[in-house]
Length: 578
Image (cartoon, rainbow, N blue to C red; front, side):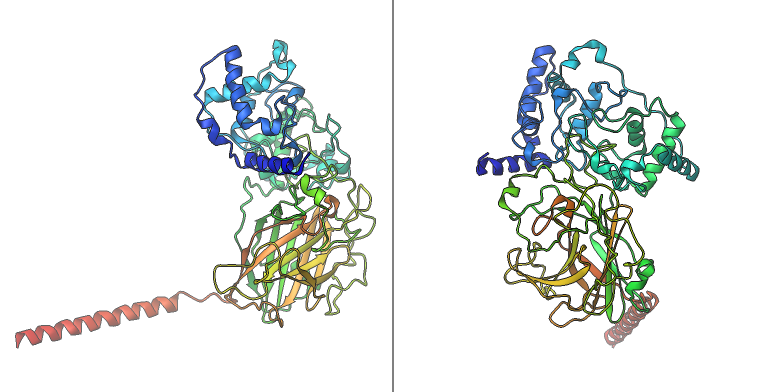
């Protein structure tokens, strides 16, 4: 495909993801038609808004399809996952309308709430025309009637946890639902495409919805065309609600990611010792930031493996420590990584066939069937087993280096690239609202990267004047501790509050901060990575000032003003009397 076509396809893909095409639908008259006329009206809607991804023939091969992960639905197969009908059956018209109207979270399929009921009916009629099975009356069945959800209790969660283990759910989804099950890298759908299980710890990414009712429906009906079976006949209704409650609890019983915009660093009077990293952040507030793909410059990551990162921070009079956590199917500690590794231009044309889907945007219970997974996950080496690996020039060893872990514990072979993570700060505090370019700075506004290749476990400070102008300054005063366990990376950076030639952090002060994550199994390196925009870190004072003092001062000030006014009024009255 010519390069110009690639660019146009990418633009179309992202336009679809943002729902840009929706405007054209508003201009269509709401049809009240039957049969061929109805499908013709649906075809017009489909051609304007859907064919770019799903293809003119409904086979999922639109011009934008090579740039999308998961791939668009192939309507000709008749296999739809988000349904209220039994396993193996076609969806109802209402099922299809619902997916069109609300979209599929964390995919390029937007919702189309602006479509009228008549437009939805016509569009569904046309979509059904792609699959011959819809023409057979015996294939049409009614959807399930959703029972009233029972109360979620601690007892139902415990029962569900036991059933989750007995049914072997952890073999795919992982013990804590983070996609790190032993069979996860080997799963395939009915089209022989590699497929990953859903990240159950992030319910807001579930394609069919994050409510308990949505999880229960998926447990009952299964997902046609995927390894996820239906349990409508194998389990009682009570058992399905119990597993639903356990799955819901894995996500913190939240239907929303509750993304943060501020990281608050909590001040402590104790030492900041990486050997105590397990308890160091117990009192620090948690901030969860969204991760998106770097799509601005060559080396683009259209589908980053990570979609969210949790951060906590503490500081004392001399040091700052920041903890980062993110989910990963495997902890890749073979190979190498760095922010300046060049990515071949050919990878900008679309995601390679071996690329791993974004965490949380994958399949399993609520995903899409046409995804791809890495050619190999895992690693032969223990990610923190090198007792000689020194985190920084402070002489400290990784305090987690001796306690084991499970990085690369299951599945796959060694990867060419390792996992890595970085924090980004401006070299100097901005004096205006303008910040350095968030992609590793710019010519006039440099940034520092606190970077660690998790295969080497040795941090390094990088100076950036842009993605193509990076310099490794060595470890300097950085130290790091890292561990991968049960599908989660945990990395702690430590640095002095004040360091020559770098940004100094002050109590009650704010500083811009950004994050980058590289997944080695997805061949992320250099500019190909997941990242965030600039956020802020606030250095909270150790003791919050009591409001009593300012309130008393304000009251006293008001009293003084009142007395002065009374005295002035009396003097004026006496003067007038004379």
